[in-house]
Length: 235
Image (cartoon, rainbow, N blue to C red; front, side, top):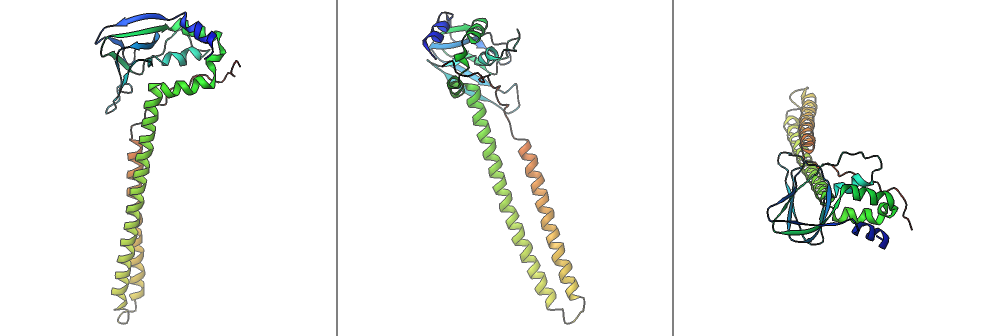
């Protein structure tokens, strides 16, 4: 950010102090300010709206911030008076000293300085945002699980095909020994081979459906809303 933008933000900051075990904001509550931490430690957790089996925890310290949902709201020219909901619960683990930037002041700065819409701010915002870091971690984990399950499915398919071929070869040898006795030997060999292939295909279908169902059940954290960074840099 340039000096003019930084000065405009600093002029609107308000110092604040939080005692140990104080809840700064709870998940689902309206976010009415951004906090820039000067001293202390905070715990930031989310259950993704109370999703069963989902829990993410991180620690905030000097130089970190919280309430980034407010930046997305402030950069949206169509946002109304309704404040965004917090995606995390933030609690002071010890005494915390911070600077607060309230919603109306951030909205004013965003409307006056196009520099706040720059791509540099976008990348910085994503890098430090707890929302984006949590979403990225879940996205990578889900992708790895899908990859692992696909590899397991391919291995099982290969094993089933090998077993089917071995059974077909065994059946062919068995019926081949009796082909001179009965004229229907060749028909029995073909029927056995087709039945074996059908069973192998049926097993593959069962595993494929089971794998697809499991993939759908993977915990997926919703991607954070994208701030409006479409405006060009002031420079």
